[in-house]
Image 1 (cartoon, rainbow, N blue to C red):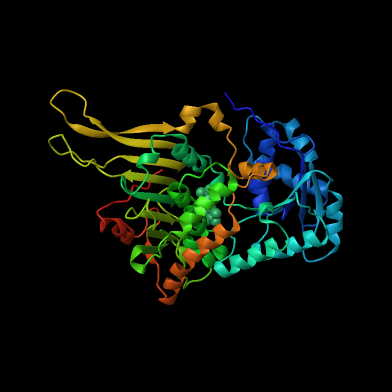
Image 2: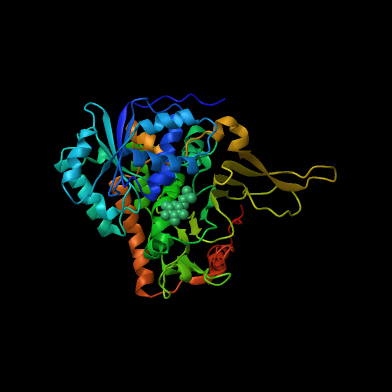
Length: 484
Ligand code: BG6
């Protein structure tokens, strides 16, 4: 059974940077899929704006091409596509000039929710915000949506926040971290706070450690110039992995509401201990064949940027003191695999004789691919011959358990755009949260910059540098396997 979709209120959505990569791959296809799901009201309006010299028909042709390429959804048909394209309009706009804004304003209706998606580089966020307010395109009901990277360090993030908040209230600013829009990431909250089963065990007394892995099989080809200025710490840890860590570690919020959830996440970030040099390992992938290494794509043959990082993170609070969180993420690894594994402590005393290869109870929340949950439990090995123990997974793949309902789930961007229209900020980062994350990340980065530390080479399609294994081995633990 497919869940009933309730249409959102009528809206005017302006996409700034409407002919860019994000609009083409995610925003336009996502909105179209929401229409196919019955969630867009028939009078929704989507207005593209960019420097590209096209008219509304040109923008519709651009959208048609993007949708044909990126949407594979059995609920969508040609008639639907025509209806969607009829919702689109376009205005050529140079952000730095004054003229185009008045024309853009003419597209906006009074009394209708207006949202402005800044699908442009962060260097334009401030200018766009000021132009929107100067030309009175927004009111107190308007929302703006900004993409990562939200700053490069604490100072630049503070400057960005100042720019945005000088024009808009915090409740109007939607900072996207698309990991928060992933189905299983939200499921993490449902699992923790919707069941009485896990929460009593969810602490240092019962949890030995937590592993958070976001492994990617692709390298940086095609994105070298951007990535090389960023690296795994800024590109993935400061945002996506920190969000996963926060949702895993936070206290139960009093309710599922934007500020209650974000207050709890912020407390976790503020409780993170500084990470000494001995507790992280940085890597950079080498080449398998000619011209395929990180350095070949980085546009800088001497680059010291990491394409892999593993860290041991301690949270200084009552719940987690003594239970480390190990984080790792990297490009060009063995497989694309993201998961959170909560590894429980062994029973305090065994009543059974004999040894077996105990790995212990582990709750794995798989974010991708094959979203689902696995709980490894100890059982009796079947058959006669006495009480021998073994471990088996209690495995639930959401695609099997939820059937058709699962195949029609919105992707992260679709869900988040609909949340913007609904005015729900729960899955968006608040300004203080972003700044706190940078305040923790900055000293770690400064540490390796000061020492001119060269990342360790690792083979493509491997699990990363060998030294990352040591990060756990020396604590008597081991990483879970990276596999598809
Ligand atoms: C982006 C990073 O934010 O997330 C990319 O900039 C990364 O480098 C991507 O590849 C991963 O997202 P997903 O949804 O494919 O896991």
